[in-house]
Image (cartoon, rainbow, N blue to C red):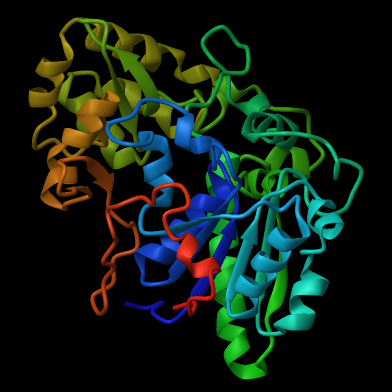
Length: 372
């Protein structure tokens, strides 16, 4: 696999850091998850379980090794530094300043191991006026402006179901780590990576920042291209209280659907782009889709060149025909489900270990055994 021989020390918890390091483990890296004594990573106890720990925990920690280290003690901190001495990558997600107080900051670690790639993931980064603020995903999404552009039918900001800032910071961190490892091949030196969830969320809005960056008033999302102003980028209720979406605004798709429904005359309104003038198209389609249940529309859209999708439940999403055909969900020996690695290589594909570590399962690594 691509990352065989890469050693990673993972001092992160919850979602962003663990997802980053799991991606490395999926492709062959050896990842040592360092957990505090007692209950370990809080993710071990969040949400439903189908085994010894929660599904949430195994979804971001499979394939890792777990050691328990008490960083409140001098001996514990020295054990961690010894792991870092032989590591290629170190990932942490404490609040800025904590690593320095513990004596495990980049300067200290790099003095001992100048080849290490050290990645810090935090809410607001290592400097700036918000540096010391506590925050999780939702607060960084709010400050980035993303929530002001994500409104429910009542016009108020809606709660996102995806931890967008968490996942984006994980992926930005992953790309940073891989770039630093690539550069190390030429320089022999590692690097320090400062990933802010707030920054990752802000950077994820290039397609909706036009008005703000051109100093225009805040747009009304319900009239904008991808947030409600287009009849062909929209969520519709069906006759049985379920929902479907139309997800592409190219005019060929508009004409294909309206022609099939006998209302090609409405296409001219869509040609003018998104906005309130599309209200007649929206109302027409709402009435049409409310007339039949979702299963009717699944069959009706078959073979029609229009971007249609049912709004799946989470269980339906896992059982989706494409998901199953492409083996995007795999099962371990206990029959538990896992999402397969997203990056699919033709050569040296991922071979994820579909097993999460028990808390402290690999503590032998700390008792003088060789770190391999």
